[in-house]
Length: 297
Image 1 (cartoon, helix red, strand yellow):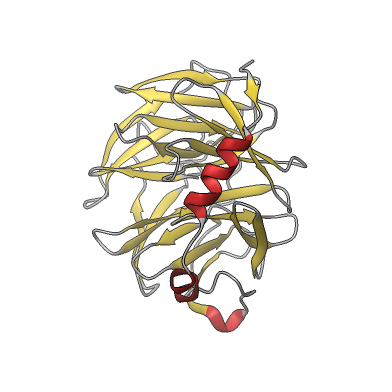
Image 2: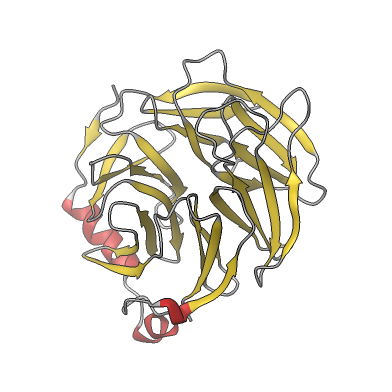
């Protein structure tokens, strides 16, 4: 098990300084007021168990991973939808995989160069983000897979994948998967790269509320203890951490020394996506077959 270090007082103060925003910057985003349904800009319907959303800022589109009733069923029914920034579906089944490596129940996604990487039941799929063609499949069946869930990457394109079922984080480098972190203190669900520290952050699933960070050496640190629970998607918007809490159906915002409920969602939120062009949060609801896009400005 990896050694867990408590964040030093110096680190807390430093991160707090980084996280301080000017009053002008804070006022440009509604991150100090609880949002209501009037802040829903668009709703995308006609989906099938949407579990995750990833925004492509170059193409101005959302990719939506559809669970299709999923879990860990190997039923070859999963797909990724492409929708424009206004919530209009351009192609419902834009990405489906191949006969040899079909999508079953796609979850978290991440873009590296021209590839959209998608976590799935048996491994990680790579798709050309422009054409939808599957270009890669990284097979995880050599491992004791629990529930591959979310995915992120560092500046070199090295991928990290959470396994919520076995409390493991996998690493994919040069197309080869390996176990990077094991015996974690809590089951990891969401993962994201903190642009402020360069470390990865893990969202805890279940009753745990402690968020951990790690760097390329695999050393864990306690990041923060947050309210809520059964955390799913996590993303940074500037210095603000946004997290989806299924326990209280909310999107919460956290900056050092300050935390609040930002949105009371209409269902249990899954893996959120951020449109950084418009400061929109895309919130998927597996059970409701829809994605709501909330405006923060």
